[in-house]
Image (tube, rainbow, N blue to C red; front, side, top):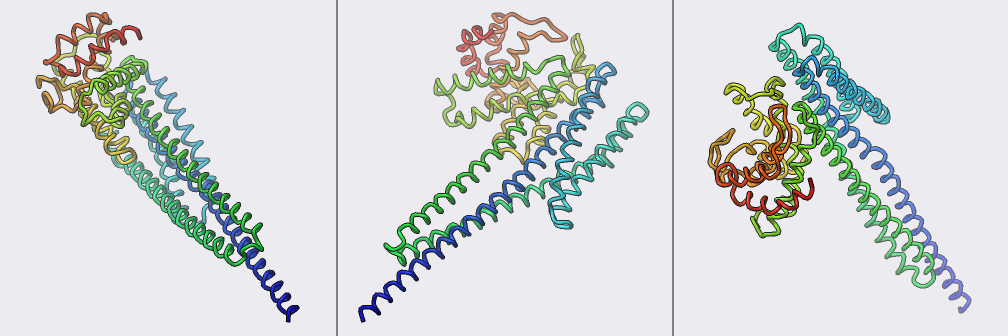
Length: 440
């Protein structure tokens, strides 16, 4: 009887150990599946998202460079043409990467069809732009516009639509993969718990190993999260660099080197921080608002892309008719902001950037443009931008004027408080006078 019990105990222990080992092996299998899922997502999803975002950014750059070329003077054409050629070379290099990714997709799948559509439409788009350039000197502006509306714009719409669908599919795949990982992780934890109660003391080592497997799964989960955040930061950086490149490009048309947008952004940030320090506009001046306004400030003059060079670079005073044309850049800038970053950035940031572009030429007394807003009708971000923009313009040399001294520029800003500028913003700005002078 005792011998039978001993054998039974050994059998029970062996069965318990076998159950524990089986559980451990299954946990190991779950971890291997997790590894496969991570490798698939890292090797495909982030590569797809990065590829389409790079293409989208390069196409924005190409489109604006093309616009510059069509509106450039003869003396500027060589420089702009070289920049256009370089951008086209970058696009074609990215299409090579795009093609390699496409080959990894299942032939005839939704993803492969969309990728092929993007590839074909971009090549057509580049070829049609070559045709458009060849028509530049022989065809009328109306013919060029008709050609662009009939061929180029539909292609761009097709490309953007396909890219948005590819991005949507990639995001859906990420969410599905997250759900699969959560399911596997839950199963692994359950088996680990069951194994613990079955094996008890006999398989303490197995329990330790199971714990190690779970720790490895958690490390993989942290790795995925880190990789996801890194990818989002990279995409955001690409978007920001593209916007800054366009802003610099616009400034370079009027003889600036891009320093104006950097200086005004810095001045805007100084005023905002001074306002927060003094307790101004507490309901508005959050850290997020300060960040958005500072990052949006370089886009205040994007609308100048639509102004002809003859007016933008005129050395003398503009005629009334020319000034009316110049004033259109404010409303055009607001529209361009929505076209560039609408739908890909936070709504609050897009609205602030559009307000700055639209209203930074409005005046406190209601005599500004484009809408004649006055006082607190003008958004706060635009009232701050107005002071920074005018001050930097005063102390800078332009094709139509010599630079004003810092003292005279401060005096003019102070005189215009209550007329051109918000008195509270001017007061904050003048408090920064010593700091601004020290940075000269």
